[in-house]
Length: 383
Ligand SMILES: Cc1ncc(COP(=O)(O)O)c(C=O)c1O
Image 1 (cartoon, rainbow, N blue to C red):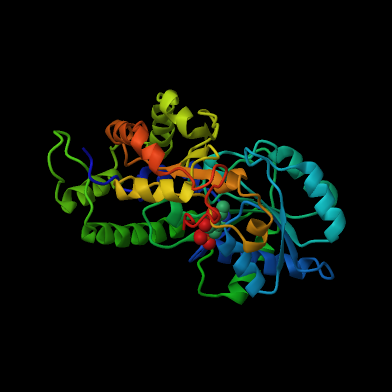
Image 2: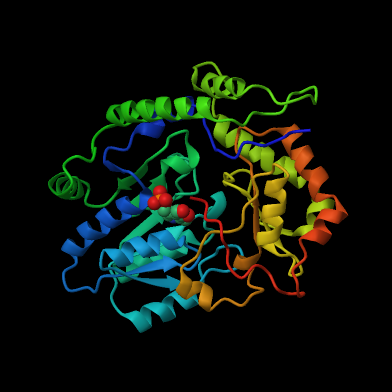
């Protein structure tokens, strides 16, 4: 039985090397995605003098992003999402009427589920002359960006969340490319902006660092024969092998989708826990397997119990306190349980997870103290 299922998402370099995928001429690399967002907003605010430093964010946005904005003098305003992370256009319209002019709006694709009404949002932004920033932080970089057919002002990626790199956020600029590149090099000369080759060099250096880090790590995958753990070195080797040409092509996307489908083969067990976030196998690329637990479970308790059993489960994102304050305890955001789908887990891991989830004693342990009382705070951000 697996002792520990690695939680780190790792990916083959091959999926980065395809020329089509590295053809973005203008981008900036930052330590985290939030700093890319901030730099872009600073640029936008120069081009929109007079507009208040106000930014519309989805209410299901990691609080660290709102915090960074506030620290830099921006006012985040949260717009609500539906149960499937859809944008409520009516609520967006009302918010915009209340708040007046803004600098920009951020649209997210949570857990790899492409925002279903993104075209409507894009149209709305064009009508309002509002720069649209697409938050692709939960998507592999960059070929699953949603707006091929539509122009967005900028796209935001957090490399460290999906790739084997310790740092890295990328901002890819659609509108005002040269002006932004100019702005960035004046403001933060040290930040790399440039072409695909430079970007690849940077990635390779980062991957090497991450590989060293992994070699030092103590967890290991299960042995196929069900015996004890393999030495950590084997995990590192498996990781390194993925980087070599010749290993299966688009590992990240394919395996993530396959893993999602493997979970879905156990619908009867999953249904005892709650509802699964529906994904489209053709278009979405799962970042996590997400369930909205039934109200009598406590998401925090469930995640820690599973974690103790070697399953890297998590709750939802850590939300801004102002958003949390207005959420009923039974709100779906309070009942999110995430399970791993990344390419380094396989059918054996998922079968093990299902054995644990299928155990009625475990379900009984993670009941909330009062029915309908889910965890009050989503403690674990996917950061
Ligand atoms: C949806 C989303 N967007 C943006 C960010 C910010 O990314 P980074 O941590 O690279 O700044 C996060 C962080 O957790 C996030 O969950």
